[in-house]
Amino acid sequence: MSADPYETARQAQRRAVTRRRRRLRRAAGAGQTRPASEAPGGSPTQRQGHAAEARAARHLETCGIRILAANLNCRAGEIDLVAREDALLLFIEVRERRNPAFGGAAASVNRTKQARIVRAARHFLPRLTRLHFGGAAPACRFDVVAFDADGPRWIRDAFRP
Image (cartoon, rainbow, N blue to C red):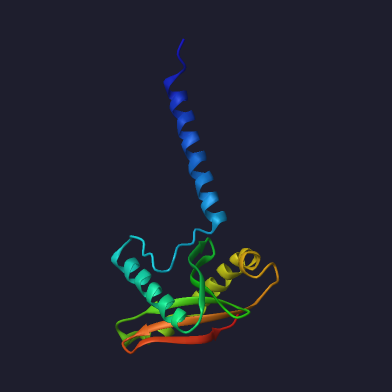
């Protein structure tokens, strides 16, 4: 005697949902970091943003900064670049504006965006501390790399939580 086909379909859907959730949890636990030079697909605006992040990473590396992760995502928000400068952990927001009519790239990191970055940083801080600082909580700094018509501008300690 065969089982009810509708029940079989419901069970298959539940299994698929469970697998999807498990995969997402694993991805969130792993942090899903990608090299800053690897630009994923997406809309033209997203591709432009990822290209700016890759340029910012190269610029920072020439200044002696070690990039630890790129594009860390969680519910609280996203962190474009995470880097290390000696004993400091840097959370870096990358902004690019071609038109300075609305204040330029650096001005676009407003209070709301700053709060989102700080929330995301608090989410990832324990894991980053464990992975890169041997469990000892490092001093943190929030920087902005702004790309305007003049080129990259690295603003150290751009804001504080």
